[in-house]
Length: 299
Image (cartoon, rainbow, N blue to C red; front, side, top):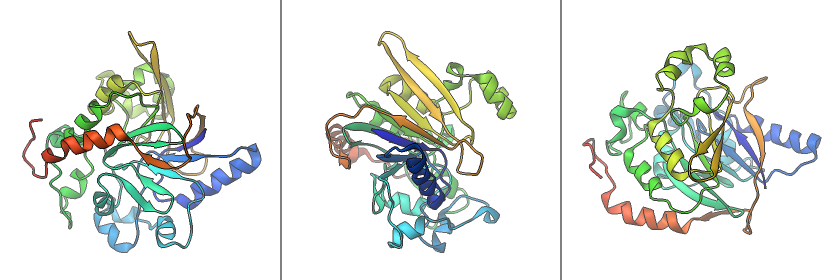
């Protein structure tokens, strides 16, 4: 299966799809699936700006609205997780995941689906320790604080993912797992992002929750974005004879490395999104404990 992986979309679906169609034509390939690693910005109308954490001068409707309204249809099955610049009001309506537009699937705040026999898990948002143990307390209309905390990763969603026992082929997040930089070319990364140096030296760059998931789930591939640079690494998992191929990508702009083609062996299965039985069981088991307050949860 040929999967196109894209970093931060920032609502620029028209250009992303046009780039893929150009690649298909020039490289004589067929793309089966597009995965976007956050900052998707599923803005349906101008009212959604009120739930987008973004300075006003950077606000742009982008082109998602065309696919939502039916003016255009996504030419490729598209899967995405949320980042820190999203129409959070809309994504909250699809907390468990679902189609935001025909052929465009949101994986939810945490989720697992299958596509063509490939098992794909993901976690939306970015990590902030101060909000990690809280519930999902934010409600529309968001105040200046809640519009930012709504996209912070919660322990409840991570704990659900940690219950997975079956193999994960692909995992998708917005921010990077903490410590992943030690498995790639750090010097090259610092040439592009010198201000990361102190965080890397202190092992603070990335998500602690992501690190825990990486070493528990041991996916074959992990795709991310957020830091607006391309970075690759191979993370070994001692005592398991497995390794995770990690890839982070830039945002969709000219002359930026925002797109990568990946060939992944596919098991028998339809080229469509299907529910994952184990994930449904975990979701059902955890539902009675779904936290909706500011109070820290003891799970």
